Image (tube, rainbow, N blue to C red; front, side, top):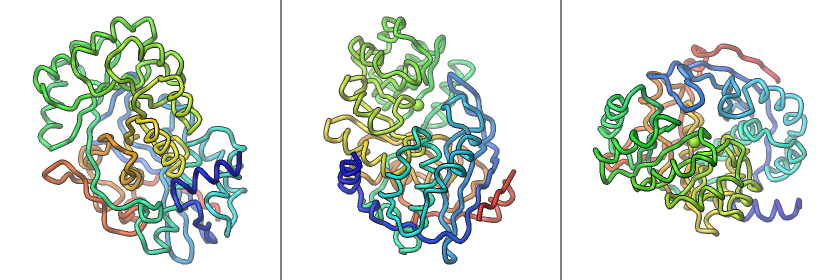
Length: 386
Ligand SMILES: [Mg+2]
């Protein structure tokens, strides 16, 4: 199993051979950034972004990771507090200088789940190592530079006219695709309204698990609207019932919340539960595990894209670096910073080119500069572990 893991991981990225440096400082920092507008899904509404950041310093070079867990368990079971606990008690003690990233991930494997905690640490280490080597992260990962496709995710609105306004506002920028959040009672007619106004728009719907298999006939009505996919219509933990639902629908299903690691992706593909996978690197354990899932999907002809968790500019920058992988075939959730934050904690922010693509930021590591004075201004709590 270990050899198999290493073989598979090396095949997807030479970064597994990079060595963990001596860490002079380790800081966990909780920041709170106000959103420009609240974001609503079928499950919850978030008005501020509260993020747990990991700052690692080695020989004067600083690497950053952002945990995608929320302070609450309404999207995923991990929270910023469980991440803090797992990191301090179980992940940090296994982190030793000189070991390779591959060896570290293997040592972490007895810690079941907690992909968000693992991703935060793996991300910060990879950023640190790439900055130390004076190269961009995608290069450390073995991926060539390329421009990234853009997409926007629209939260649940109060009314269909408000939704049409939100789509019109989004379409004022050249996004490659629009994702609409749906829920019971705000679905068929809402999608129809957008489709009638924008017949050619690349459009998809995300239900965040709001339906049950009994709703199959109702969801089949969405087949009329040429959606690119319907994302996570059934329970956040389900794979088997999605396979049954996919049999009933012409529209491809996409799994998001149900995919925590490569094994979940293998199960989903074996059961034909989805034709598309949304890989959130911050949830599945990090960049290396994401590349393993993307490689599996590419082999199977399954579409892949990079989902967003309303990250600050740090997490957003990791998602951009990941999407240089050719396995990421579909536009993801990466949209312009200005839609989320008036002031972000990095520079430069994400801006679309005239053709809707996003250029990679030019710096080393994740490519952006983290503005430490802004981090300090938005900090709620800072804990120094070394
Ligand atoms: Mg989703």
